Amino acid sequence: MTETATVAGGCFWCTEAVFEEIEGVESVTSGYAGGHVEDPSYEAVCSGETGHAECVQVEYDPDVISYEDVLTVHFATHNPTTRDREGPDVGSQYRSAVFYHDDAQREAVEAFVDDLEAEYDDPIVTEIEPLETFYPAEDYHQDYYENNPDQAYCTVNIDPKLSKLNDQFRELVA
Image (cartoon, rainbow, N blue to C red):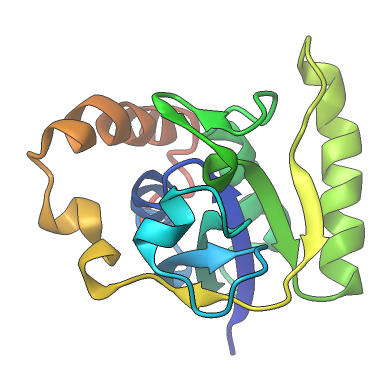
């Protein structure tokens, strides 16, 4: 039996690559959530006009990894204090967000952010909102890092996130 978490923290290629390394994660799907346009395309989301965030849906085994551990990895591998930006990617589609699936997730993420706030000099700007609809991204976005590890964006932006993950969360890495 798996559970689902939906998080946004910049480019979904980066977020997907991080979660694919975590023990207990069964699958990661890049996609779009939080917008007002039905079934948006990548190009439409990149325009910033649809209101969607690039995000990932993480299917995980709660007997192996907890929702709180998913949140720990999410918040540690992006900057939750910058609005509409992660690294070189700028725009509302790159915002930090957690799209909760039920009241238990909402309560957990709200408590998590309250506890985490003291660790940052700047306020956490991560949006916490209910998941209305998740739209999977186009096929070429799925497993992007796995399929393109030598692509410049990947080596400059994803490799450092994976190094940080391995250094800080060795016990969670599969």
